[in-house]
Amino acid sequence: SIFQRHKPNLIVTMSFRNRIFSLINDAVCCVDLSAGNCVYVNEKLVQLFQVAKDEFIQDTGNWLNFVYPEDMEPVKQISATNTDFELEHRIVTGTEIKWVRHSHYLIRNQNGELALSVRIFTDITKQKEIEVKCAEQEKITNDLFHNNPNPLWIYDKTTFRFLAVNYAAVMHYGYSKEEFLSMTIFDIRPDEEMPRLTEAVRKNSRKFTQSQKWRHRKKDKSIIYVNITGHEIMYAGRKAEFVLAHDITQEILAHEELLAAKNNLDAVINNTQDLIWSIDKEYRIISVNHAFKNNYRSIFGTEITIGDSIFKDESSEHIRNQWKKKYDRALAGEAFLTVEDLNYNDTLTTSEIRYNPILKEDRQVVGVGCFSRDITEMMQTQQELMDQNQRLKEIASFASHDVRGPVASLMGLVQLFNRENPQDPFNENIISSIETVTRQLDTVIHKIVDKTYPNKQKRESKD
Image (cartoon, rainbow, N blue to C red; front, top):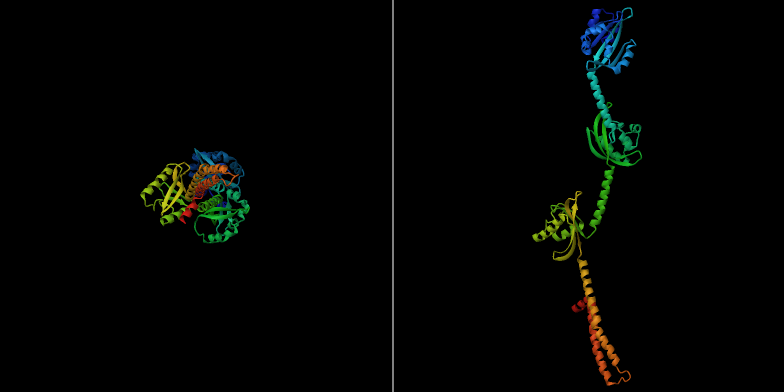
């Protein structure tokens, strides 16, 4: 200021002093210490304090009445020292509170005695408002940084050292703030990530780094997966990068578990000869297993792919309508089973087909899951068992009727045989009757054998 430049040798007249004060573009009050009265008050002072000039002239300490109450004590203390000082404080003028830079200078006369007390008040209200806003903005920024639930840090793009880390990073990675600030971004990477990171930072000339998946190493040596997003900033005069790390470890592990479960399910589904497929409400294929693909290829000579219509190679409108009715039943919410005889490429098979609605969480039907099992052999076996049961019934009937008659006859004829006189002519008649009954019994036995082994009978008849 002008007083700081000239004060040591400033021995001036009143008029010269007033000329100097008029050059100052701030509020000025000058007190003659020897007379104890105010000798100069400029218009800036009147405008700043919004009072008449006479009030200052009549009362040299009037300015103290305008000091903001909370600032009064430090202002009084420094004013009581009777020395040069510079202090920022608030004043109350009317209904306004203003910030001023209060400068006080003591000027001595040619004898070295204190002659003048000069007070200069510079209105810094706008500057303070800006500072307050900046401080508030800085506080908000710091709060957003330090209290963010995601790990955040700033690192030097030249040295790669951490310049700042937030609380979440400290808690998540296990390193203290001091440890972080002694490390580089390479120190939180596993060894196998080093080549990739080296290449990434070498090529990283962009202002913004889009989200990328990385593997990081915590203090306890455990490995986590994170998505990294960065933005270049200037921090403490250094070219730096602001980084947000979002831990996606659980998502990755859950995805891997789902993938493993899907692979296991696919292994089960694709290692069965049963046909499995599903369609949406538009009759488009959602999924098929290998058995269905192979069966479709063998029947139609083409491949079926996801998104195709289930009816794309069905030529018969009648057959198409039959299938559509069943799908529509399931799309209406019904789960059911059918046994159907299917004839493709002149091959007749019997299949058991299950239709199950596919439901969303709100129970809305979005498709149909189907499961088809070839039961041709089972049906044949079942028929053979039924035939065998019928034959057993017939055998039981033979045994109870056709066999019992000849056996009873034989038993009666044996009783009539004259054992005491074998030469009895009547014995010859009995033997003849026994031969006849025996032939009848042999015929019945052949019938039983034929019922017991029908396939053998068929083979013999062919031979």
